[in-house]
Length: 212
Image (tube, rainbow, N blue to C red):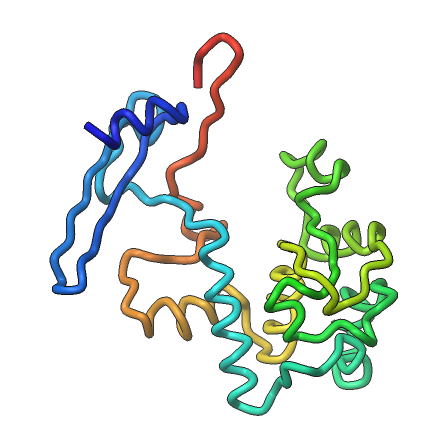
C-alpha cells in the first residue's frame, strides 16, 4: 500500500522496492506498470543510472592497483603516451595540466556537467557520441580552479570511460561486465548497449493532459 501511494504521489507509471537485511532475508514488492499495458514485476529491468558511477570508479582503481594509472596524474600526462586520447578528448580543456584523476573521481575537477547545458537539454533525443559530448562540455568551462569546490559532473565519468578504454584496449562495457558486475555476483545486472537491446523499463513523463 505504501509503495502504491508513493507511485501515485510522484506521479509515476510504476515502481519496485527491494529490501535486503543483514541476516540474508529479503523482500521485493512492485506497483503499477513497467510500460503502458504491461504490469511491473520483480524481474522488470530498471536502469540504475548514477549508481553505475561506482563501477567506473572501481575500474579506475583497478588500473591504479596495476600501476597503469596514478590518482594524482593530470589529464595532460596522457599527451605523450596516448596522443589520440589527449587530442581527441582532453586537449580542449584549458586546465588539463591541473585536473587530476582523483579530482574527477571526487567531482572536484571543475569540469561542467554536460547535462546542465541548454545545447544538450534542447537536443537530448539526438544520439551524440562521447567525443561530441565531451567537446560540447569543454566549450563551457568557467574559471573554477580544479580542486577548489565540489560540483557534480556526468562529463567526468564519460572522460574516465574513454581513459579506461585507451589504457586497456578493451570496450568499456565489456570491462565493467567482466571486472565489476560478474565479480560482484550481480547476476541480473548488465551494461545496456545496442547488442542486448537496452531491454530496461523506460521512463515516462506525465503530459499536461494527465497521460504518461
